[in-house]
Image (tube, rainbow, N blue to C red; front, top):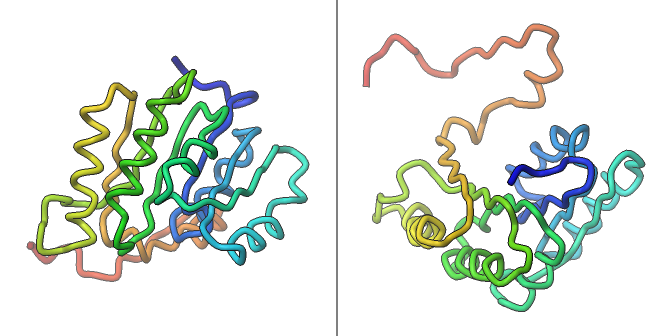
Length: 182
């Protein structure tokens, strides 16, 4: 079932983090209802300052502890699509991802799509931040939720999205020699 950008509610977790900070401005022209979820009061205040005056969209900024299953259920109330970014290097990141998936499965109606922002090569067990994402992906795959798993690469962390978006004809100068084979 496709989403309706005019009426459906999109939830973003870690909304004041590296990924969502850059994603929100691209969502605002299309999505009319966003629920931005943060962990701290300072993040909540920053997002309120940045987006509370946006009259074209209904933007709700909510503080929650995603390690608490009841908080996950609360923030998913009325949500039709989820973009879940887990808190990087958090000792309970796997539990948080599982909580979000479990809470999505208990909602009626369920979200029509669950997008999980993972990491490239989550099977690398020696990289703990990668390994913590692997069980979340498995739980999502085995759930009955429609899903998309994004596995952004490391080079995207430093990708100058705002700078490129401000250019009429964007040009990206690679910070490595593209002709050197791996």
